[in-house]
Image (cartoon, one colour):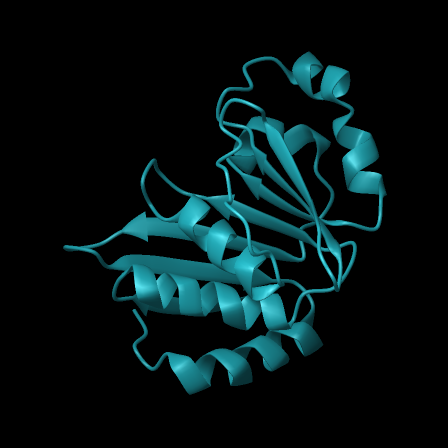
Length: 161
């Protein structure tokens, strides 16, 4: 699996990173956001949604588990599975139905549902660095999509780790 490593300097860099990925987004994609609390996962989701045309407030779905957005180019379901403690909870939420549709799914804390997830289009692993920096590993199993992302990201980010 192809992996891209980046160091994001601050929140603005995280929002730019999200915008680059949003430009490559397609219906039906599964994007996993894994990392510790306050690593930038929700900030990324906010930037991603805004880059896709959302103009309103982006709520963290920590308590609602999912927030859905119908956007001009595609629909997005933003999940936060942090509070999921029992796999049966996913069944009651209709999780499989969300995944089976044509919407792009952004999932924070995907490890809480690892047993129920198909292969991700992108898996983004976050680490908190010094100060405001964030270290990112972006896994992309599709070689052609990886090449497209690499070229697009290279224009904005030079620093690797």
